[in-house]
Length: 307
Image (cartoon, rainbow, N blue to C red):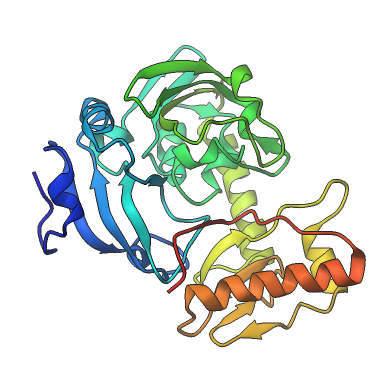
């Protein structure tokens, strides 16, 4: 089956028949919170894990592949992404199942959807995940966290599929999760996560969720085109403080600028290109290094080629 609305390109003719959909020359600006980026040569949205497994087994052996989730922590360059971009967006990848003391969720489940699940089932322990934009699958490789908790604190195991299309479960300890990083092979794709939960009255869970929401509204930009925290915190330091002390709080390049509310957030304020945003980030890295001798590391994932 092939997606509708886009003319087939040469690459898609080489790909295996699937039950999901192929989208040719799909604008990645539609799939990222920055709302920038060139097209994916082909986007593949599998029907289920068996469909994805078949694709990985039958595809051309040297086909470039990458995976995107909710696009909340992603900058796609203006030249787009060659090869195939896989996105787990169908209902199969948003499934969830509750067992005694844990919940298993598909990688395509939005973090925000956990709120309803938790309140309706009197659960707690995952409030921090609810407040992180994006999909659950994207939380693993970077060990996403906030408000004093990280994914490693609640993850029991992950269901993955490797580059050969083989599906298996991996215990959390085997992923070596640490601050914003993990030992996660590049050819693995997260299919589902099994997370620890605790019994908690809805009123208590809602109180925590509202406190976290109010904190973000007060201290971080919202209702703007941003990808969240741009740089990781160096050990024992805070990226935003280094940025501010290095004179970068008011920087802007064309339509890209540093947020007035939190200077570790870059914003597409007025028709910025991906190149504008990346150049702004690299300018900050250079200025912080010049001022402090510290090299900031990007937390936002960058994909694709320059135009």
